[in-house]
Each structure stands twice: as structure tokens, then as C-alpha cells.
Length: 346
Image (cartoon, rainbow, N blue to C red):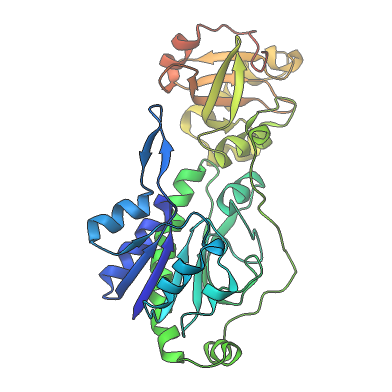
């Protein structure tokens, strides 16, 4: 098939590679323009553009595809059979959606209608979903409202962060796209409603509908007055962005574990030891009376045990402003902290 591929982040690269490896003809790759990134603010291509350059594919980088009718016409002239979208980052206008005779299809990182919109991976972790998945969806003008052709679910581990989950979903997206495209080709062309009926695509209902809104800087700030599980979900879901304060500096939390007895089978051996250690977490210890955000104990092999509104939280890895990421004893030395010190104080 002749495919026009739309994608921008590293998440989309496995899908691009899979389509090429499956023998499809990539007539073009549409991705976001180069952006300034890193400390040096160098102008860098998107991961999809970088990979497309390696593959020798035609590349298009619209600033706003909705406002570029000339580029829309150039893309239409490629005569792609189908468009495939994986985390492109812009909403496609009706003129573009109508171009390919076999439709525009999106590999969406959730089980629709759960988490339509931006950041479905982050939001499923923030809300503590036990599972998620990928749906191959026919695109229409609404935001992630189209019928779903294929979908597959995966379970989410308690200690899995957004980057790790994203890598698994990226690979699943690639696999499902390769599986879906022969079906789409076999269904043939014609009016959209007839094509989708031949494919047996599932029309989305409204039951379980959620919107994954864009995240803001305020979302990144840890509130120690929440429970250990809520804070842990924030750290995992916003990885590597959740922050607190330590002696007037920003401390980025990179890995945590909720020290909750009912979750003991899902945490690390170090965390299980702390749960069983009466001198750290039992009644009568520092944790019973300490304010949320207080360092209850320093565990050289594990990290910081911090008080919350409920059970304590183990901070396994963190990065102090201006320093490298650290864990265990290295983290304790980097912070120069003691039991009784307070996190979250500017």
C-alpha cells in the first residue's frame, strides 16, 4: 500500500519502521518542524524526522497543517492509499482527512473512549488504571471519536512509569497497524460508512468516556498532603517531571514506591523490607506524628522514606536541581539530609 505517515515523537518511530519492514511504500512523512531543545537550545529534528532522513523518505514539516492549503494540495498529489497517524501533534482538517481513498487511521494509546485527547499514557497512570492499550481508529473531525477497528489491552505495573509504558504501547501500536492495514486494503474504497461497515469497526459509545487534558506546570508539583499512592501515581505518570522542593532547590522525583501493606506483593524487595521493619513504619515511630513531607527514615539501600497524608512513600531516585540523577546512598549524600527534615518547603 502507498502510505502517508504522520508522526512526531519517539513513540511513533516503531510504527514507521514496522510499516517499512512490512513492505509498504511510504510516499511521505509528515512531522512537526524542527524545535529548539536541550540546554544549548539547538534546533533539532523530531525523532520521526530523524528516522525518515535515515530511511530516505520524503519529509514535510507544516507549522499548522490547517493553515497551509498549498501543502495540503502537495500531500494530496502523492496519491496515498491511506494515511496513518501516530502522535502527530496537530488536528488534521477535513480537507486532509478526505484525501486518501482508504481513509485516515490513528493508532491511539488508550482503549477508547477511555482517555480521548492529549496525554492518554500519562492520564491512565495518574488515575491509577490497572490496564490500558492501543486502538486503531478511523479518524473523523471529532477528537478521537471515530470507530475502532482493532484494539488490544495490556496490564499496567504498579512501578511502571510513563516512559516505560509508552515504550510498550509504541511497540503494540506498530504491531496493530501492520495487522490492520491488510484488512483496510481488503475492504476497498467507497463511501466511508460502507467501508467501515465492511470492516466491522466498533462505533464508540459514551460509557467510560474520559478526556486526557493537556498537562500544565502546576500538575508537576507534588502535594505531600495527598496519599502515598496518589503521589506515586503522579511521579510515575509525569515521569520524569514531578517535582518538590528541598532547601530552596527543585528536586525532581524519578522513582517512588508506596509503602502500603496491601501492595506489598507489587513492590521491590527493599520496599517489602521497610514494610516489615517495625522501627521505620510501625505505630509509635516518627511516621505516626510527623507532618506530610517529613523524612521519616534514610535507607541507604533504598532511599528516602517520606511521610504523606496516609502511608509513607519511598523515594528511590531523584534529581536535585543542578545535579545528576541519584538513588540509594548516593541520593542521601547528594541531599545531605537527616530524618526529620522536610520536603516541599521553598
